[in-house]
Image (cartoon, rainbow, N blue to C red; front, side):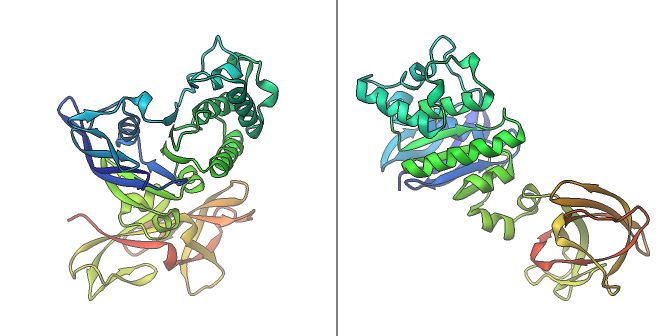
Length: 346
């Protein structure tokens, strides 16, 4: 075990910002803290960096205590790299000087290794440039190179791609992940972007109000969410409510098994947009297209479903281009693999 939070809590001005968090990071592993703004992600990153002291619990690195309520190893003694959201490059230094800034010995060998690192990040032609002469993506990669130059075993990434446009973000994070894997560097990353977390991570911890909602591999969180909050964070959903009767819930799509919920208990049925299937099968649920939007690889279809008591508005994400005009009659089915049942509110 390379890095560990053990039952860590933190308090700002008598308000608890992080509640009893336990998390381990193994050598070479990329772990992401995922959640909305204010959920405690950045606080945990600052606790890892040594910029905050836990109010309870222990932070360990390589088995050694580096933070506790009684002890704080200074950030500069932790051997941890940090990439800030703002990049925080020194404007008066060239790229190579920025990258080698944190090295204790700036020998010719150290400079050579720094240049090799720039080459890995496709920045070899920028070594003598200044930050203001670089694009946002280049500045982001310089910040990564600076954090990696001292060969840390762990690097902390604070929403590193948030300032990049979507196309550039995809390229840069792919390149960053390749470099981390090549060097065997572990990473703890903060993001509020679920797709980004799934792309980058070996494991993800989802946070809500400073508490852990769920942690595990991306496939576990996407396919086996333990709460409605986690299910909704990993993609847009349709939501129904119902009541458990005889171990199942009656819906417009038929009865759905709910063996873990007691009879009489309210339940939320969550169906991902891509789990709502538009089918020619006229045995399905009849619906009418309200509008359709081409999104590139998929189309998003808005539909109305008249029932005996109300008109439901549902959304389906279907592959490719479609020719569903408003008013078109369609039939719907539900993919049970992308349908989740959770205890509802009384």
